[in-house]
Length: 552
Image (tube, rainbow, N blue to C red; front, side, top):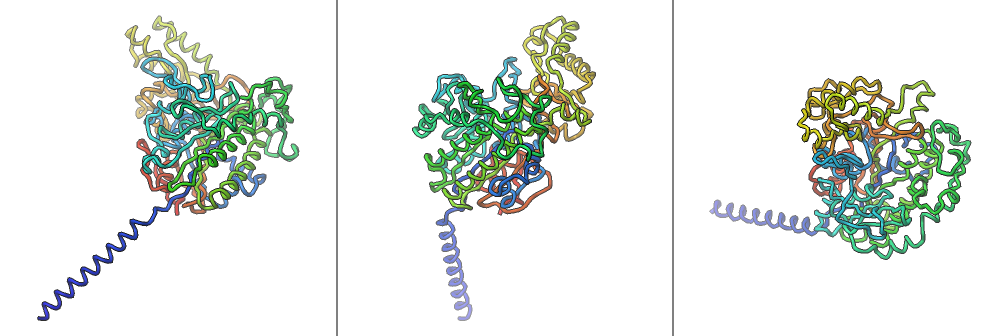
């Protein structure tokens, strides 16, 4: 009898526990997975990491300072490959991958099988929407991996909206991914925002309406003067520094005020090289949020914005110019207004945002030399001419090297095959020639990089940057402070050095802790972190690791 009662009680307890578990399961299944309403990606083209702090005392409370004081900053984020250029950087941020995998080996690269140069987003199968120019023959088809924006679309059965926006086509197209609802970029030919038939057959009414206001012309008519009294720009060289700065076409000197209203002469593309290019980009971003109702649905939407004017201005004037300092103070003001807009539209804490850069920039070599720091401009064209002459004298074939783009030797593989030449012998001759050049630290056979006597960190970056289809076969590493260029003013980028490869990375908003991290992180970690935040799969070529310290 006692055994019978005990069995009955045991059975009753088991039924009760099973019922309780089922109730818990039901409650859990009916609860919506918490996610932000909107994810915003901000890539500031050519922003060095130290710009977060170089102008910190002049920043407002609501822009860069707000991100640092409310969000989470990764202070030691590095680009783990070379070359450090715009297309590769934007692709890496959103794929979590490297050129060796995603295939975007440069802004332009040589297709090794044919010897033809290809632009990163070229697509002859599409045409412009909103323009008749070739600027619209663009798409993400050359990118071989998925992006975190693609993965968000997949995770929500394509209910999430994804839109990419940038003055540069590659800055809007590559972050948007393959499955974006739209990408928009600026066409100098008609001074309007355009897209391509990859995405749509006609511009939305709201984009047409914005274009009708002729925003570039309206901004350029304002002229460009310093935001604050020019004598307060203590982080810059004197305004009139023609040894370091390039001037606008038609201007007498690289000085303020810059009369854009007189200089642009109907050429709307001039806005790219003014801070107003960033302002106009953020205007379109707000218009996209309003008209596409981003963040207003039941799933997370993604707005990928690249701010391109910082790159154009940096190239022209260099990091130590009043123009660059003023550009970042103006961008800070624009970001503060943009965050305030998001607070009002979506509610503070209901959206997440990250800010990073596609690459940094070197100091102007003349500026460094004038301050007793070794530097210089490497004459790539002269080296190419002399290299081809040396190879022609030995092998009796002209132009065996197509170019030295992306700090790589691109051989004429078609001619090599036709003449039945030895690729290994050509590489050996070329490496010996390059290593005798005084500006070059290393010349490395990328297919045999494991055998090279170079620092391990450089070896990894060369491997990560090497795409067998789209990269040259010899990597050129210049001495610190040196870069390839055709002029003495302004600056450029593309190397492994910290000034090019150390980038800002700050997260803020929904799901983000407040804090900072000094351990080494990588550009490839950004997509993995966003995927973790949104509870979606990482992109299919991802090699990064989520930065868990940043996430609640």
